[in-house]
Image (cartoon, rainbow, N blue to C red; front, side):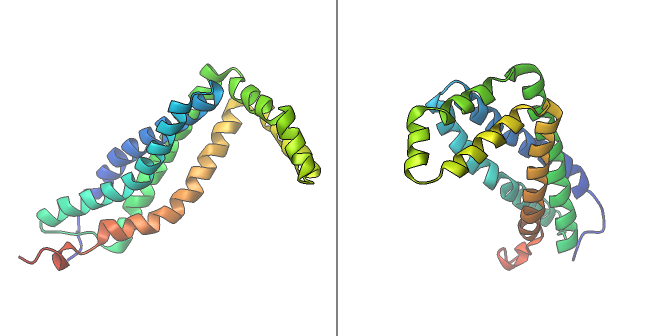
Length: 187
């Protein structure tokens, strides 16, 4: 029996906050690792990527178990609404973190580091030897365009990326949140 109440909506904001903070920590570890050439932050970034990928599924299962012990369960559409809402809260929070980073902390350091890595003589030689001189020029021109973006535009690009990934992940998380646990737990 699917639940008739909308208690799961409040969980979408709470869980979206957890996911958004995890995505923000992932972003900050990545950009600080690149900016300061810190390998440990890059390794932490890889670990946080795994956590950020699994966390929505774990939180969806947590909600499913809470409702199961209350004698209810979500329908697939309610699970989809829960997952989509959770991811939208996460995307908004992560967008705010990205905006704050580029507006107040970055001062162009990230793009400076990326440009210095791309313009290393070894990198230029490798692209030329592979016959990818045109692609290298396209990459450098794209980096120049990215450097001209405002903090809001950069945050909007990250938000859009998270939004589209969230749409696809919502269908999978909805399945986990609405799975009938009575098949597993025979009472």
